[in-house]
Image (cartoon, helix red, strand yellow):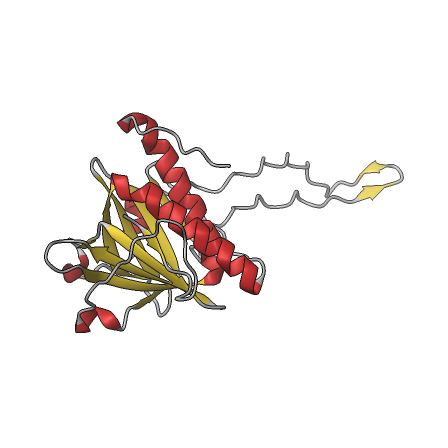
Length: 233
């Protein structure tokens, strides 16, 4: 179950208490500036990216079962509501690009550039007609849309350490926030002791885009696995 935790003094109806051990190597957490959401056959993979310093690096990889995603989305939505009540609207997030329907990068700081066609060659006109040196005007080329990156192109530009390749499994998420950032504790709820497998911090400006990407990935997958639609008010 995904459990929201916007503030220790806040409570939601039927919100179960979650107590999880935080290992020393997880406690400090990782700061991320973007997220790539990948849909797998039985799980979602969340790759948290840090764009500075260069090269861009995947600092954490979290593996979530499909069934956890709608609860994650609900918990994040509730935290956003609490944030708005305390601090106002979320800051604007950075542009994103979508390589395909199954991979959704979020808050990437370097979207692909749009090539611009060169301007037409200038000409000189005299009262008697075209000058001898006048060059025929070249038709302006239509503006090309941004090149859509495929997943391999994106990952070729990222640094991924060997110890992160297999990722951190989680079947619960605890979310907190302050005025400038959101924190995510990804938890493994296993008997006899729950534990935080990964802790990540994201600036509040990236959260709206993260929620949009999670919703988009879930809505693309939900009909294929026969999950009933969410009844939002």
